Length: 73
Image (cartoon, rainbow, N blue to C red; front, side, top):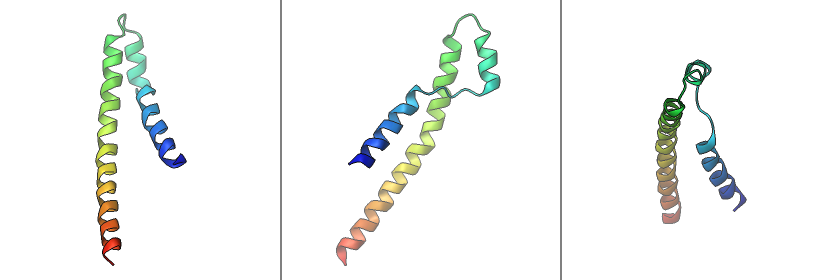
């Protein structure tokens, strides 16, 4: 139970992190409006999240497959 709770906390903690590289951050901080910086940050987080979702889904289906095999024995 504690392990599942830890995964949930780490998953949602990623949404609040700043994902900009140093160069992007320096260029975007010099801008008057911060709308572009927020958009770039959201885009980076979105692009970073997709591979984790795909790998997690693959791991889940592999887990279900091996669980099904072990129940049939």
